[in-house]
Image: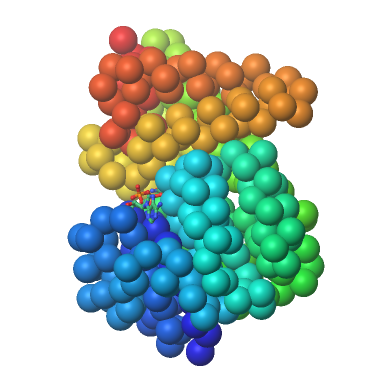
Length: 292
Ligand code: NAD
């Protein structure tokens, strides 16, 4: 049993903290939302009055927060409090690469190990303990984080140094955003040219246009496996979260000098879809906008 502080008990963090408690860890939980804290208590975590209180005496401190500013604010509070020098900081939030590197450096200056460990998989995977973690940090830090992450996921992959977990996450999601838009376009073009969606799926899913967006997450209702398209694009991965990741990818591309025109175009299109008030719809729902 490890004593773990868990900070950020929202849609994702709630289920993840519950899985750590279920695995027998002593989880001290904190969130600014009293409702989230009450849910964590019901799931077997011990509620704390602040991030610092949760982290006091913890061997690992897991954060699952909205964005880089939140992570930096919480880490600043923790550094000012009494975090054991043997504690490891594990940030599972999706944040910008620059902040991920900066907070890891700040942790190192305090003598603390830190990893960025963003996840692939949505709320269902967080609740089921089947997330995939992409981890950035030293070999030693990865070895310490791995058993904790394993209690919340089905795969824990070491990507490299600090920041590379976030790099893997945003590069993957930029590819996903662009292939989803391209998959929607291909279905619409096929339809205009007189092919029905099922026929196009049967051909393209075994031809060179195949991708995860087509065969696992088909944006057309009634075709392929059950996906958010079969539920009027409710549930799944919200457009506003895809847009967040595409913006992080654009910022990282600008910082690093990478040319990513397809990623930029996907970001523009998702921004337009969100501006139409559709930010809460699954990201495959962008086919509705492209159809018009
Ligand atoms: P969420 O908004 O549901 O939860 C975030 C929680 O953090 C909230 O409960 C909020 O009260 C809490 N919080 C904010 N600032 C805090 C602070 N200073 N101290 C303590 N608690 C604080 O968000 P989510 O959907 O759980 O996403 C969390 C992270 O996971 C994000 O970075 C997101 O991009 C990433 N992610 C989400 C999904 C998804 O499907 N929801 C999938 C993969 C990755």
